[in-house]
Every structure is written in C-alpha cells, then in structure tokens.
Length: 563
Image (cartoon, rainbow, N blue to C red; front, side, top):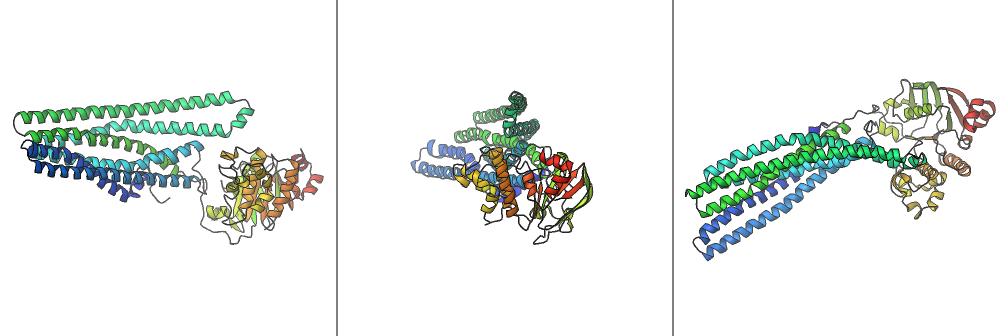
C-alpha cells in the first residue's frame, strides 16, 4: 500500500478522509458550547437590567434573546453530534474495508500468526476505536472553544477570574494528557488479550465436532477459561486505569472550579463586581467543568485510538507471503501448466506438463508433499528451486490477482460461509453465469432437496447445518462455478458415498470439458475419469499412465488408491 501504514498514519487517514464532517461537526458543536457559555451571561444581564430594576419590556426582550440562544445551542448540539458520529462511522467503515482487503489480498501474509478471531477483532473493535477519533476531535475542538468563550466572558466580568481560567485550563489539559498515558498501554494490552480470546473461541467453535468426537470438551473449556480470564484481567486493568484517570480529572476539575468560585466570591464581597456579574460568574464556573471533562474524555479516546491504530497498522503493513509481478495471463488462457525441476520442502525435481484442456489426476503418497504442491500451484509460497509456468509465463511474473482469476486451487479444507446454498455456490462465479451445471456436476441438487428452502436455504456458519459430505459437494460446486481456465481440486469427495462419488467424477469431467483440470486425489472413481495419472512418491514423479494401467502394473500406486 502506498499510504502511510504506521499507527499515526492510520489516525491521520481516518481524520483526513472525513475532514468535511469533522469541520462541520466542530463548528456546530462550538456554536453549542458558545451558546452554553452565553446562557449564564444573559441571565446575569437579565438580573441587572430587568430584575434589580424591574422592566417588563426589557425582560421580554432578553427572554426572547435567551430563547434564541437556547435554540441555536440545541440545534448546534444535535447537528454537530450527527456530523461527528457520521465521520466516526464512515472512518471506521473505511478502516474495516482496508483490513478486510488486506486479509483477502492475493499475496496473503496478513493472517500469519493471527487467528481468525483476532483479525475480526481488529476489523471491528479496533476500527471503531480509531474511527471514534473523529467524534473525539469534534467534541474536543468545541470544548476548547467553550473554555475560551467562558474565559473571555469571565474577563469581561472580571480580569482576575478570566486570567485564572486562561492559566488553569491549559494546565488541566496537560495533566489530562499525562494521565492518559497509562491508559494507552493498558488499552493495548486489553485489545491484545481480547483478540486472543476471540481467536481461541473461533477455533474452538469451528472444531466443536472434532472436540466432541475426541471427548476433549473439558480440555477445550479449560483452555478457553484461562484465555478468557487473562482477557478479563486485562480489561479490568484498563478499566481501573480509565477510572483512575477520570477520577483524578474530576477531582482536579472540582478543585479548579472551587478556586474560581472562591476568587469570584471575594470579588463580590469587595464590591468589584455586581449581582448580575456574580450570577454570570457562578454560572460560568458551573459551565466550565463540562468542556473540561470533555477534554479529559478526548484524551482517553485518543489513547485508546493510538493503541488500536498500532494493531491495525500491524495488519496493513504485514509482509506478503509472495511478491507479485505485473504481467497478465493470456486472454483467453490456453490453460497449459508446466512444472520445471520444481523443488520445495519434500518435492524434488518435479517435471510435468499439463496440456491445455487435459483432465489430469495426481496421486501423492505423502500428504505433506501434496500440501506443498498445492501451495506452490496457488502461489501461497514460491518454490525454492525450479519454476511453474502458465502458458509459458512463470507464475512469479504474473500479478497475483490476475493469476487467481485464471488458475484456481480448491483445497480440501475449503470453508463455507453463513448464507444461502446458492450464495455459497456463486461466490466466485462470473456475473450472470448459470450455477446449475456446476451444482448438478457436484450433486448439490441432493443437498438442496434436504434443505428447507432448497437452494435458497441457509446453511449456517461454515456450513454447520450440513454433513461433511454435503459441505464437500457445495465447496466443489463453488470451485466449478468459478469457471477458471485451470482448476486444481484436492480430495473433493473423501466424505462422499461411492455412488455419489461416481456421479461427481462424471460430472466434473462433463463440466470441465475443454478446460484444464487437475485432481489431486487418491479416489479411484475420480482417477478413472481422468486422461492420465501422475504418481508422486518420495517427492518425485515415479509413474505416469492411465489409471487402469497403473492399477494393473504399479504396486505403490495400487496400494495408494485401493487401500
């Protein structure tokens, strides 16, 4: 990303992107604060000019002026708060989009070392806290205007009182900033613990069936209890810091106001100011705690925002797993895939050419080698040795997004999302494409018939309402509906019965006619429907022939696919 992705840069972008609403909100909120400061002054004038010396006409005029000021300050508050909230929500929304865009970026890397729950926490709570800076600035600028207006009005009533406020208010603001520093550190720790707890919870919910099968519920509960306890303690520490800061600021503010009242009282007793001025001074003294307290709130919000901005910056600035080129695949792509002396992890010297439109099966005796091959094909990593080419162009020279628009690797553990069956199938499909051929090829019609609502029925978070075999069929239909020039599928039918697997094998062949398809699997039904099969054993290609020939002539292959 070209933009500044430091913590401070994140906050600057959040404010700059909503500058108009922040300015409008600040002006309107400042009008509200100025009106609040004028109220005690107007009341003092009414006392002096229409009460001490009774004057009905003057009283009516000043009451109308007072009502007008009340109207301005009321609408100033409402419209200013609306503009500030809009700025905060818009900034948080844009930050959420930035985080999600980075997490989904083709070059990957943002998820490294961060569980899904932690990323969700960054995209939601941290984005909200940084967005709230706009509202805090709106209120903070208005509060400064309020303090200055109060001081000016006090100066008109009494120079000593005005000077006292002008000197005391900045001191209080500086103390508020100093007291907010511990809150910033504790807020950052709180967010880290909360994100970790969210990540653990998400992992446990995702694996709840496995945990029940292993009878490991008690261990899972103990793990989450410990994580949740740590998060709670961090939250309590942050709350204590916030309470301490708020309490100290209220104490200091109260002492400051008491000092103002004491000085004002002595001036009244000495005859330096009159009754109306006394009323105004007391009213202004009661008004000042409001904007000063707002300034303390703004300091706390900025402290929280800085901690959250640092976490967002870590995600946005995360290095990618792979670097991307700028080349675009041929349009339309022929679909020829070539591996030249490919070496990575357990793979060593893989030479393979997949012809355009070929239906190829790959059997890998080591599951780790299969995962490595899929990661290299998907460019989740680049090989240590050799290269992979698509239509003669190395994958490392292709732009990641353009590569994924041409070559799709559908891994075995592909996840579904909460939504309808149709939404899941068409998630990556071209706009306007008919999803039914892909659904028929993957035997998803049987899944739809078991759902209330058919293809419009909801399948729950990660397809929780479906069986394992049903989830596999929906994931396969999604991969087929994407209609990529090259499709690599890993073990799409391990939880499917034999009859359905045979139907799917024929369906994949039919749906992918004329386009390059690679099935990394040990399923005899799927392999029997391919043009040829490549056997990778010990990290190298040891056999290559049609499925029937390998079953007959190759013991290792026969063991891999028939046992």
